[in-house]
Image (cartoon, rainbow, N blue to C red; front, side, top):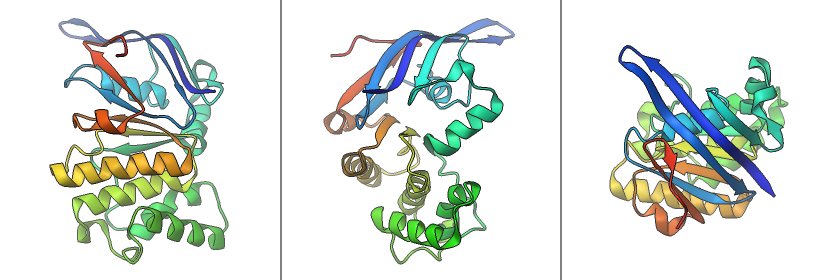
Length: 225
């Protein structure tokens, strides 16, 4: 069963020098539980594509369906619900709230869902243990290494049990060894949870970890294989 479907997706931006075609007729499907890598040079359209898939941006043309929901039919509230309940993001910049502890950062999406406090505490502890940070819950982001901060961000993304996790260059601020550990963690989590993951990265080792590799070049998706 396909969890992500994209058909004829294009995205055009206007600039002082003319139109910029960030995406050109992109189409693919991703099945439930797949770990898919999205690779391409800087400016190839990777972030634009991920933003469109996650409801952060709207394509100029084409159709996107996530977990059976056609994004074209969603208003702003519907897209907010999609990001709260169905799609979670992990970013290159971690995106943690610096004044909150690791536990409190992971708890944020559960508070938005108004999950009862006992269930929140249990879920937060479970997620921190899952990413190897049991015992670090009281620490704030500034007290953690870059790799640990990204693990907190991953735990936060997983807390609400989304159907899809989108990671945009999650190793971009990490050294090669730590980056490889994060990619390995995401791959292992995809296997253990059955969650569908789409990971954008420059790390060539992702080819060995991914079920499939999608390659973007100048806004176009190259044939697989």
